Picture 1 (cartoon, rainbow, N blue to C red):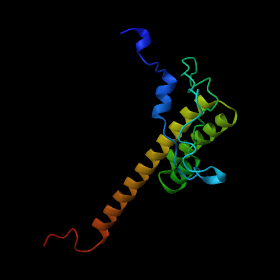
Picture 2 (cartoon, one colour):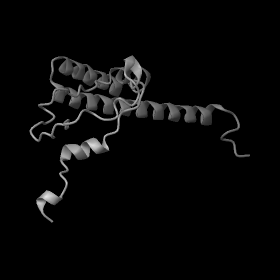
Picture 3 (tube, rainbow, N blue to C red):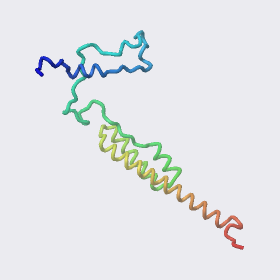
Picture 4 (cartoon, rainbow, N blue to C red):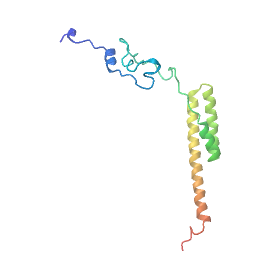
Length: 146
């Protein structure tokens, strides 16, 4: 077949043929009739993906969490020494995030989260051991075998 016998099908036409409108709550709101967004205007093509855009150069940046509430709970309600260390890391992560050092804030926030989880696990396991010892020692008839 010759080139002229093949119908011209461009990439943007293939995109337009497969386009489906979002039919959510905004479709039909504000005077836009339903179905009017089913096909964009002719000649529209989505922008090609840019290989030069990286996560560092993108407009939106990830703002890491400092896990402040989790570390406060673990510091005062669970195993205190590890919880206080988690709270210190959380404060340092908050400070780094405030000053725009998101890489350091993410690293410190992850350390704060890990220490807080360790504090919660240690505090819970210590409470269970103390409860078990209390039941075995002070409840009459539990340890007597006969």
